[in-house]
Image (cartoon, rainbow, N blue to C red; front, top):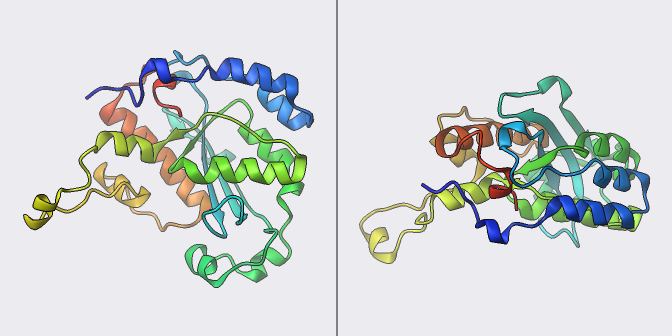
Length: 240
């Protein structure tokens, strides 16, 4: 199977983007993030510092919902740095809904004394800077963080991510059975985090905890590279 998630011609020039964005950034943390640079797209993934990133949120719309917890796990293909993980509950701008409490288990009591995201931006940027984020479903972490920073700093944050869900979608293009296949009993192939991990023999973890899901995502990427790609796969073939 091809190791390319997308063609080389469609790859963004993120190193150049970072250089230009650093010139425009106002907040020193945002500027420092860009000034730390971004790997060349041809850099083998084994040489790239990675950061598994997961948010629990009050909903799925970044413009109307808020982050309530953050899980960060630095890692490389060689190992996961559990001694450097970071987990933080943050107070959302809007009240919690019972639906989101049921999903992630974070209650009003948990957030009453929690800091606003703005109060923990220093450690957040310390973890993010110099690493490529790895997520499972990029339509959460990247837009939610960008909107949250726009509200607080009047600045967006732009960066590439490796999306383990997108990799699973690439590996299973026929995951939705046809009508005839359904009649024959074929089931859809799930690319959710827990189901994707099962295909690689990874252990089951309880979901909807930002730190546990970040660890699960890091392990999933390691397994994906081991089974379907190579440590020498260019990072630019995997990020989006």
